[in-house]
Length: 130
Image 1 (cartoon, helix red, strand yellow):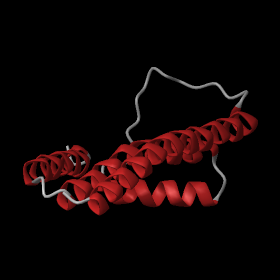
Image 2 (cartoon, one colour):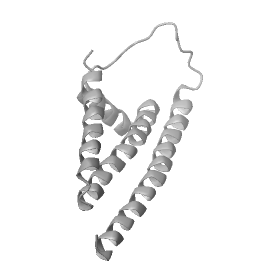
Image 3 (tube, helix red, strand yellow):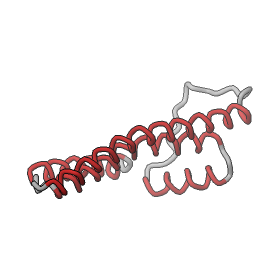
Image 4 (cartoon, helix red, strand yellow):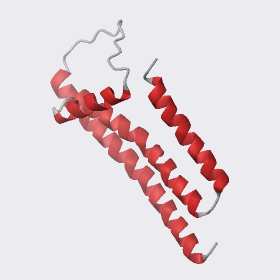
């Protein structure tokens, strides 16, 4: 491995570190803002926690509903957006790691990382379709 490739890998490590750090802070800030919005609009509401309501079973309708709710300024959807971003942060780290392992020509780790991404993607898509 040449010095030029080592510098690129070190740059990727810095990018990954910053991605994780800022991704967590940004997603938590968005969820916190959503919590404030929710409490301002629904702080005195009484909730019935004895009944569980499952709203969506399709990942695409969930994403559409979150988008529409955020556009309308609904606090619960802003919180959910923060949670989605928190989930996507390590997923993006996996994808960046995949690129780094490919650059390093470490094909065993490329395969393992692709397998992890595939398992997570399958659990997302099939987890919604009971």
